[in-house]
Amino acid sequence: MLGVWLAFAAQACMAFGFEDVVKKAEQLSEQGYQAPDTNLPESLSNLKYADYAKIHTKDGHALWEDEDLPFNLAFFHKGMHYDTSVKIHTVVEGEVEDISFDPDDFAYGDLDIPEEDLEGLGFAGFKVTNALNDADRMNEVMAFQGASYFRTLGRDQTYGASGRGLAIDTALPSGEEFPAFREFWVVKPNNDSQYLTVFALLDSPSLAGAYRFVLRPGEDTVVDVTSHLFMRNAVEKLGVAPLTSMYLYGPGQPTDSLNYRPAIHDSNGLLVHDGAKKAEGGKEDWVWRPLANPDKLMVDEQDVDSLKGFGLLQRSHDFHDYEDLKDRYDRRPSVWIEPQGDWGKGQVELIQIPTPDETNDNIVTLWKPDEAPQAGDELDFNYRMYWTTHEAKFHSPDLSWAGQTRRSQGEVRKDNLVRETDGSLAFIVDFKGPGLESIKDGASMQVDASVGENGELVESRVVPNDAEGGWRMFVRVKRSDDSQPLDIRAYLKDGDKRLSETWYYRLPANG
Image (cartoon, rainbow, N blue to C red; front, side):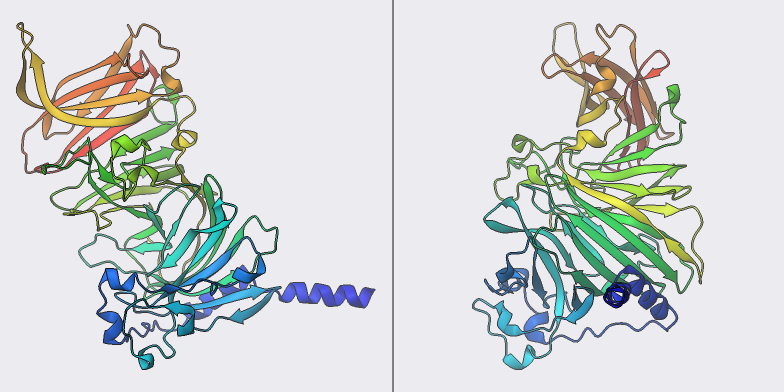
């Protein structure tokens, strides 16, 4: 029996795991960076999106599809700008097995791709399916495709914001470096597995890294991320746990074009939770930043002493706030990042990029450590990601939050009851949540509002929202120079008691 136990123990010790990927990343970091081969036949590189979308894994050809397992794998074909191959393996009972590209696993629709162009092509990525919404049907729950991008879904959600493994020098004049996952190992699940483990090897000119993703699908899908990085070179800006999203317009920044859809965005704000007790009244600091689609690039940093969480949220899931039957922005999930362990001091950065339409991800947020990493450094960043449409669980338990932001021309009501504009801009913010439940008549409630040097505060007031509950805040401002942004901050308080998160909007230049 002892011999059997020793054999089992030896096999267990040899099982492929995260430490094996860490060793590969370390070895890779000690080598000079080699850019991957991006040669792709014109028959595939010249495809338009509509034609590329015709290529998909055939029914019955997904990995594990005939084994009645809780997760299956399907694969993304190379084509268009997805011109780099990634190696994909499975880990079966601790042993690594390679997955080879076979064009017979794909359907090509009416495309005429020469057979010789498909030989030894490789994969552009993969997706994970699970019976998330229907016990009798496998639904896509996670996808890895392109650089270090990945997306995840919870129950009854549609893809919106994306995660990234890492961001380097984003929005710097020197240009952005895009780390990419080069190799994956997916652990084959058991029949009763509630989660799926994916290992990934990250590579870029400045670093190499090992990643582990543990996927737990559900009403809120949770992904636990473990990472270990080896720096080849110093970098000016390391973006940890980066998220990307799209914001075209909404009530806080209405469109100039006539459109029946009142809003088009995957996310409508950035929420940051700093655990250091530095807000008025001793409350932990929560800051809500409504997003914008600026005329020119806007990059803003928020200092954080003790990061407890940040995320790009879609705070409304009411269909009538979007009225889009095809793209269903009401089903786009919020993504919340919860650090595991102390990340130290740093900044949560918000990057907002001009976009003319909804096809471009123009919003980026990331956490940047105070100290820029140097060549030879080893770094660990572990965090939990929530993909959710139930944002209230990630709000402060004792503060109210901004349910919506609306923008309008400022106006005053004359004695004859006619409303006239006065040259100001008005922001109307509806607050709701536990921070307001103890307020009855609101006699002592106040708005604490301030604006930056490029403007003046015309008015701030708060009234009860008798229609839906909560309280409605009005802030009117005038900007001195329209060609420059204007920062506006406000929150609700009752004497010295803070009642709401901080609402912080940067009005874009010329916006």
